[in-house]
Length: 155
Image (tube, rainbow, N blue to C red; front, side, top):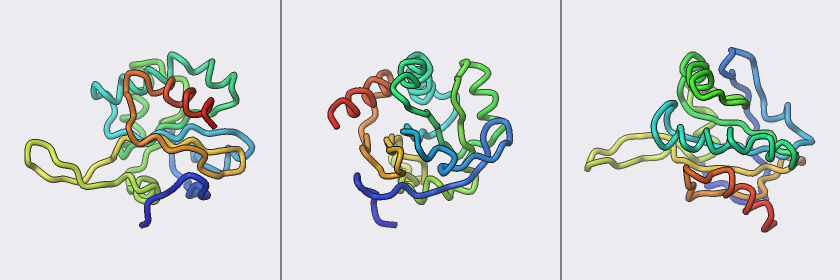
């Protein structure tokens, strides 16, 4: 899979959210979407990132954004994560790794010399027309929502 670039059409997907409801990217045509990928529910960096979006959720909604998080965790894990941290947006379960692969975020990682496959933390800002407006590859987990706001202001 070639790396996605700004200006390309965002790959479509359909999967389940934390409640087992079917959710598709096409459900959000006509809205700007913040699609953020993260490695694992309830880990320090992923929690900080999710809580940044939670804490600024109303502001993001006011700017016309829908926030969607994606990891390879299952629906039950997502439900627990949302409940624990009062997250107001859907988390998409990509247990089959179809979405992470189509967005090019299923990558080889290296920790303490051990190589393994995992989700790269990356945020895609997708326009109302389904086109990728901005890709944030170096996510600041503590300030992820502000990074999005700054990126959108720069467009």
